[in-house]
Image 1 (cartoon, one colour):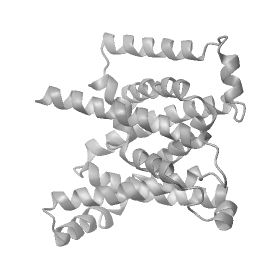
Image 2 (cartoon, one colour):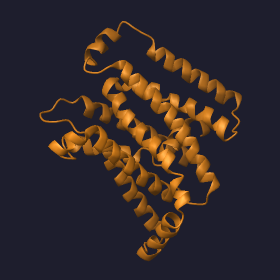
Image 3 (cartoon, one colour):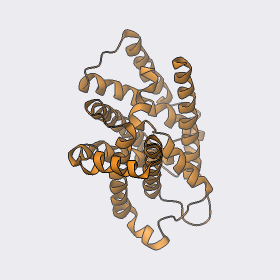
Image 4 (cartoon, helix red, strand yellow):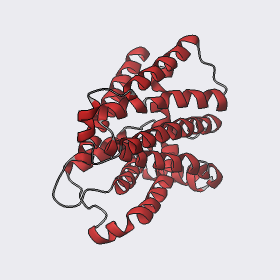
Length: 270
């Protein structure tokens, strides 16, 4: 039963990551009349949906009692301000990472992005060894070497890139590559940091995700104000939103369910 659950979880994770990448890439390159949706607002909406979903899960775990839900949120979040503040660091990094993914997919094709982003497995492994004193076996290190080799081959110039460069003429491949590499390092560090916090406390993952979403929403709104404040004041917060945009937002909300840390770990530690 446990093995079947692992493979089922792996299948769901593969479906979520693949569908998220393809839909996000399509939504960022689709040519439509009117302004395109702002990625910064999409990140904020995803965080708010994540908070709502986690509150519902805590409500379910509380035997559908509003009084118990209120007590849990009050005791675990409001009465423990220092524990809550610990999540500000990974939350800020996750917010940066989510925005970088939009930048990367706006400047890279989906296949290159997907393969390159798997370097987060390498960064997560390195941070886990240095921060958590984890020990990797020979086969795990060998897998990481093969992963690095595969990513290097994907970035190797080829004749077909002349055709790809025409399709990507609207954006810079270098900017996309730097964005995805930065996201890999941020994902690895924040993931291991988050795991360390989870191991040091007894709070549930859902409570921790509510705390992450709270700070993520604040950081995200700051990003909207700083970078897209003028566009929001002119065309509105939900400018350019359509059915495809909402699909991307929902997938982004569901994708890091165990949060980006666990999605980074999954292939190695399974």
